[in-house]
Image 1 (tube, rainbow, N blue to C red):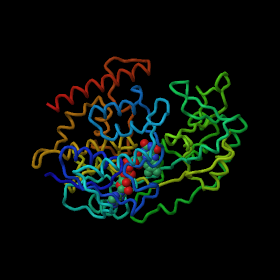
Image 2: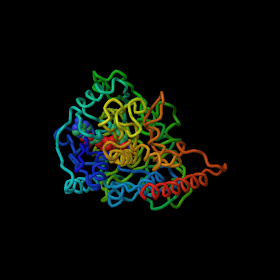
Image 3: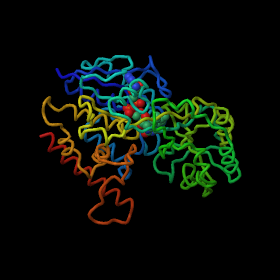
Image 4: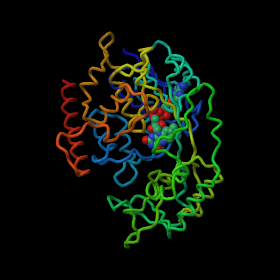
Length: 446
Ligand SMILES: Cc1cc2nc3c(=O)[nH]c(=O)nc-3n(C[C@H](O)[C@H](O)[C@H](O)COP(=O)(O)OP(=O)(O)OC[C@H]3O[C@@H](n4cnc5c(N)ncnc54)[C@H](O)[C@@H]3O)c2cc1C
């Protein structure tokens, strides 16, 4: 029986484990939690979502929607589990994170081909191994990886948003609505007047931040305090200009108060965290402010004056490696080709993209021993016109300024015919991607 070791039962590792085990591989799955926790995971469950509970849009006119469709065609395991844990969020696939993680843990634990080891791996040996230890890979394993690949690595930070209890909401001020009334009104909206908005921005600008000292770990030489754009802290956005927030995460267009044409000056949206809607995430409010400041400032949001914080926002290490410099086309390390990389550590960005990466790496590993690397097969399997194909190419294509990549339409080659209408163009790009992928999957599966 073919045997593999997988390090990390997060999104990428869980997907890879299920893919391989279902194909008859014997999988030894190593997960350090709950014995050793990361700074953001809360449980010992597998595939825990650490920040937002949204797997983003399901619409084919969005890159994330198209990517999910492609992953379904490729036979993704975790997506169908996610769909069974859906919580209403308009056209987004938001999920009950606890239910999802519990289900994934149960399915993996009961799989006859998977053995689970609850321990931290500190060194990489000679077994065929997938390293899917994520952006918060433990320090010892990171040190060992750096010994193997040299110091070609990068380093950056992410911020997460607070979660509040539903009990504390003042529903006299808050209203339910989805932008432009598309789909069910799943979001709660906190409308700001001009004065309230200006006071909020002023408070953000004058608040105290966390010290970053604890993150300056000694073995990271390229300490880099960049933020991934979608996770930029709200106070950093506020600092960029007084209107930055209301043209960005707090934009009010399409969120007019129900039954009126009255458009608030700015809006903060709340998204349900679980099926029972007992907790809400403050959308776009990721922050590195001190906890006391968060309490004070977020209570200024209309309707949240009595907010009870279930989790405060915070900032965390987010590590990734310079993949094009260190990876073969089959996602194995150039310097140690029994080791494959998957997930965010390998330079994809996002929950869905990490699941994709776990699925792709498992297809690479499945090559028969002694044969050519199956990256050749990935080239055949993943057309250039697909988001999944381009994300894989991103990891192996030389790039001096390599940074983690998430799904976006900018990755795709242009259409033969120029189409001015944005929506129609995206529809055509999605149509082409799905058509090409279906054909290549049929060919590869022959
Ligand atoms: C703070 C933060 C917020 C984020 N927010 C979002 C978001 O809102 N939306 C989004 O799409 N993406 C977000 N991301 C990015 C990314 O999508 C997630 O981090 C995603 O979980 C990555 O999947 P993964 O499988 O690579 O890693 P993970 O899901 O983190 O899984 C890695 C697993 O490896 C384990 N592990 C680590 N080291 C070892 C070791 N030495 N031995 C054994 N086990 C080990 C960990 O305990 C963990 O369970 C965020 C990332 C961070 C850090």
